[in-house]
Length: 134
Image (cartoon, rainbow, N blue to C red):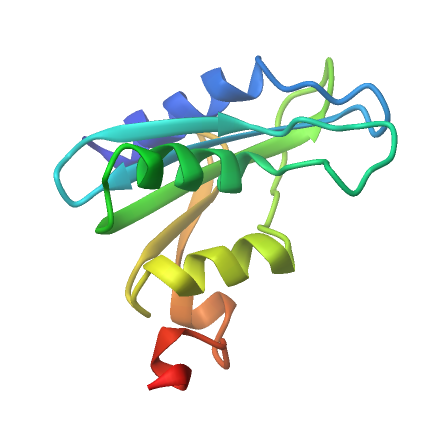
């Protein structure tokens, strides 16, 4: 799968977001090392604490399906009814990535027409990971 196709999958996942409080819709498409893609969208809740981000939905769906090796994730976000804009993963999502991803895991941010690729190590250089517990 190309990076553009992964960004397209994230944009499509964004359409399913449930964000009546922030009106900020996010879609994510997670590419596994086996070539499968798992998508997620943000799902808000009136009490906010149970709200879950698109990235975590995609990771948890993949892990539930037995996947443990990941190559890249595309993240697309923005206000509902507007074109997507640059949207970086929150701290909680970065911590979930630290559980499953190596420093060279790629994170694509932007839109299918204009995106940048970062490594996990660039976005979360001093992460707490399973390595810390050994």
